[in-house]
Length: 326
Image (cartoon, rainbow, N blue to C red; front, side, top):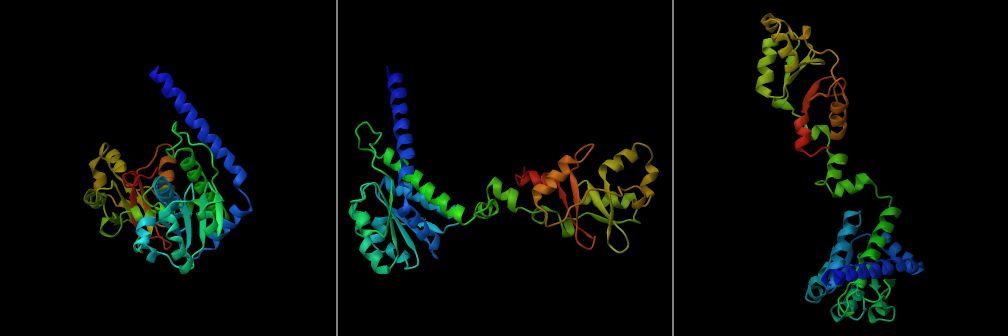
């Protein structure tokens, strides 16, 4: 019996809320477009305000706007009434959320916002409300029954508000041609940010950490440098400091299995003469791709070469993995 109630009420809730969201498409009218254009024309911030559950949804809408290129923050209406209205300027746009449109904490700050000179966009389910009448634009979230069996707890209304907030944010970012690179700029700590922003120069070993030897040095000399730097390879240069090859610990191991005499040979006689390289301004994901796709087997190090041909750094596979580059 208990599970039957659980399933029944869960299905009813999802059905009611999805129907309410679907019906919102009827409210994407000219006034909705004018409200979005008001946001697009804003040269400062979108200030979202709302009380109770509308306030919780408002915080999410503000966060979505901010993360998609529209400077935005949430202002609690009660705190605004006691000083936080100082956050608002005449260049801002205020998005006031209230399903009923009659919440006193929100209504009380509207006259002051008007005096400041900021346009007000109402997001409400009641076009005849005081909020709607006091606002410059109205975004209608509809007035469908709450999924709550008592018809009291905000459920359908908050879902509709959240969906309409997403519609506004997506419309704005689409008109502004907001791209993946822009999104990554605001999410540098996320996987997308690492893929689109992190460059080889941010990860490579350079300066004293960069293993380099001149080609006339012996393999023994190179081995000391390789051991000191701990990257399993050294970049090899000519007398002018230009990159001419790579010596790896794999080459040394294979040579040791045959004859120790090679340790006295000059590095340029035993190095790879055509190793893979990369530039410092390449994306770290490009470095990972180059390393993984090398045939017949992946490589673990890449020398970083500048425009003059000098080895300015070295990147190791573990450096990329530590940064979460995938």
